[in-house]
Image (cartoon, rainbow, N blue to C red; front, side, top):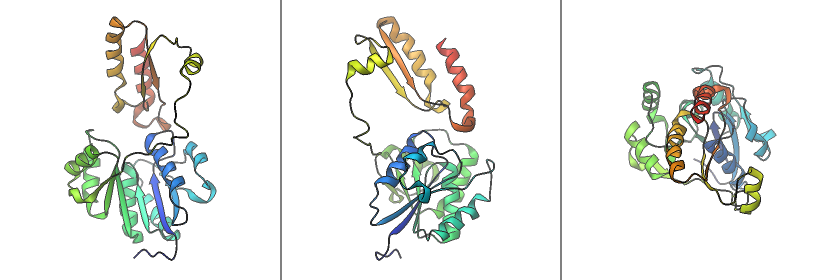
Length: 255
């Protein structure tokens, strides 16, 4: 049982700390948990950690267990050793590879609470992913979703009962994200104050479906020619999910 006479050790596991929504949420969570009650660590499975600079006390709290290839079974015992060395009470994973590794490593290390995540909804799940999730279903104690739709989708896809889920919406740093002066921002971007603007903020990967907004925008221009489209995003590290090729296809589609 977790006791209150010491800090509760929480290990957050994710693929990387690149520029992405889940990655940003991990950093925000680690930085804003009550440090009098919790000793929070972050473990990545890749050595790509640009957001690591935003993690407070990262020299002590950021750990990396490099996954050597897509199917590297040594990640599980290496992660289990880290959980044991930190005397982890809770392991909380984000996204597919960390989810599976944390479920198995948590059981191996006898971590008291194993927490999974659902960050999306209504996406296509590959056969390999579905089998891995279902085979490790009994290893996870609770799943945190950032939407009710995500929780319902995960429950239907992987067979967890509804009582296994908690919905916690994404937090926003209101000091960092707050309205700026419209005129000065548009001047920085070279956009007229009279123009209409449509924007999408998303990683450059196929699941974000930039092609749909580009086709739709072409129709918008027919009726509102003084409109501009802002695509804010980046390719994923290591060309994960073929994002370099996807970027090229979108540039050609824009042309």
